[in-house]
Figure 1 (cartoon, rainbow, N blue to C red):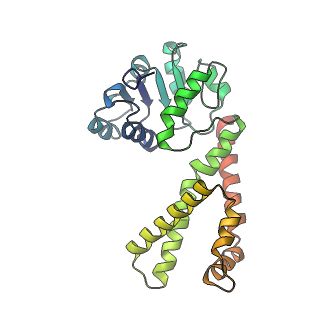
Figure 2: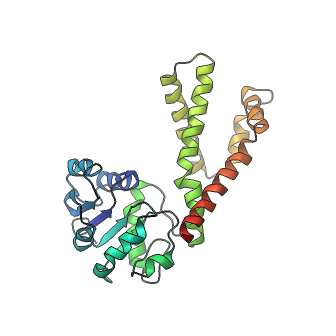
Figure 3: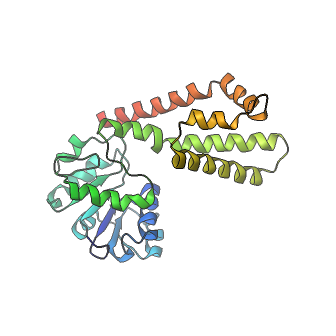
Length: 251
């Protein structure tokens, strides 16, 4: 389907929806005039209007005006939204839930399908979704049990990275560098490391080992991180976030 023909809706206008919307617009995947967004108040809608998108306070209007609908509400709100949308869902709609802890079983009670695929999603729908999301980063089809793990690793993981970046910068401040400069250097360091992981395909342990020289600065720093149980702590953080996503899906 051509970008000019595709009509995309967002139920919810928060940060997650905004990031995805910006990605679609910057990549030219969908013209702004073909995007409609709903939210209870105008607080998050002003930015969408600046981009040229249509906005509304009516969730049903989004469904009626769109073929691809991203459900970007808070998880505890989504069941109510699904009940509201149920009468208007047709076989022509592709609904994608961005909410953590919401299972396919719950969504399919109202005829919805998400990625991982529900029973109503064909190869064409999956390819369309991957095409839409590709400008915003990696988009993979995975078994449904991986969805909550992805939440603990990536959805919540950005906060872990921000905390790590903050700590790195504060270490430099402790040694006498201004915070603004330290933050920029920390961010660029993380960006460079991430690009190396993606571009080389190497195991992180090998790349880490390549940076270490005998008796050098890096191994001394890594020793302190090991003493502080950094790896175990981060592993536990991913586990805790994943388990919480599972609990939210059982509510």
